Image 1 (cartoon, rainbow, N blue to C red):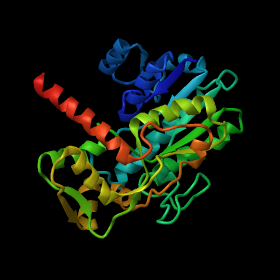
Image 2: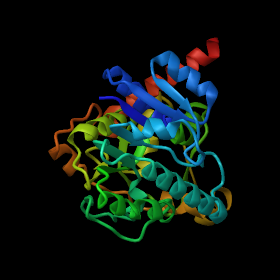
Image 3: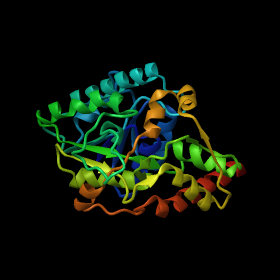
Length: 317
């Protein structure tokens, strides 16, 4: 089973490529970055330098593909997300989705894993964890990925075997988790929280997230959706406590008003940070998936060890 992966050089995508190669799958990655393409080739992946929004060799390769994991999305992390930035993201996200699906050969394709996010499903509240049939008003990034997700049934009805994955907060040694938690604590600085807000998060270790994508290539049912989270939602404030314990440093927190967060990070990220992403993995587990890290309590030590190892390697190079 060879796999065509878009977005294979990003935070989650790069781990997905690594896990796929470790499991022995031939992998082809579409990337816009020639330097990262060289790195992937050294790992053993086949690469195509190109862009879903432009004509290229990727179209023939995609038309020949039997299995696809679609992770590509416009970059956003690390910048203030104004409404204009989010609207540009929405257009790019939608255009990428349509370009991908319009270049699929439905007669050849056996499975496509389309990666969305639980923000599409909306604020799940503080009661029992919500399942795949739940839907409230999309929050945070939700309104801006909704046009893309909402057109998927149109292609399913045409015979495209799409399985939609909704990951929760994907934590690991890269991206938001070290930036928001590990780095400030390691420097004896406070983790910033929002005054008056302590929402429920449903995390998943990046390794388990990547493994779940590959699991769904075999076990996922076309036309179905699956929520990818671990066994136990956690309060956002408790993540600081766990991070400090794993780093063996003193816990420090500072709370800022919501208006200041909107000013510094923009309305989209502020809304996302105040919403309850309180979801259940029951459907995924019933399909047969098992976790390496069933809770963030069991996974955070692994993440901190990887982050420390990278920091030491970087310091010695």
